[in-house]
Image (cartoon, rainbow, N blue to C red; front, side, top):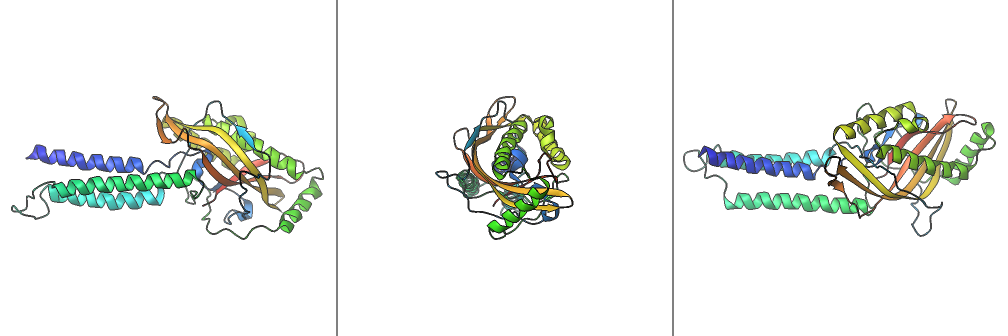
Length: 322
């Protein structure tokens, strides 16, 4: 009798393990794990202004492609609300079944129920299949560029903002006004040179992230960004996961905001790109999440800052669109 009950326990716990493994598939994705973090000065708690996403057939800037020599893994919030909610609901249901099946529900037979029935087994199987189908469809939507993950929780000391709705599209006059202010202290500032440089920095930062070592591009990051990204890269190394970022193609880089405050220049650029984003086990080379063949399209807002004047730009924040 006890052996039979332990077999039932094993079936339930294996089911729960499968459920949690499926809900973990969004972990470790490109630089910053697909989250929003960093500092945008006084605008840290304001979502970047949005502009219409360009179509691949008519990019506003030249397309850039890059393939890191040794890509690496990517951090994440660890499942978030979906995992907590679904895990709690399913865990409760499966726990209830286990409770009843072990004879503690007060059923027939004087309180020692009849164990797993065929209907309970069918229900567990259907439930797990339904969750798998839902997660698979969600990943397909993400890879098609129709939805984007937005992480705004505090994590590991990040100064993340509770980003909600986006402000209306930035008027051209706002950007032009910002350009004039920047050029007052840096007359040689050129908008095209900045966007081209931002594309180069994007590739360099992605490459360092893939290698799980941000020290080589520390001069491209603010102290806060360097600390956050290196800590997450160290976590990936400890988990023996490598995030492969292959065939990166930047479709466009567009300036959406320019402003000055506290003796510093700030520029936010919308980066529209796609890449093959998948994570492998460092020991076996097995793909544990993502796809080697299905590219992921995404757009992110990268904010760069510098002391006013002719000084180098550093990445200070990344914001994900929804």
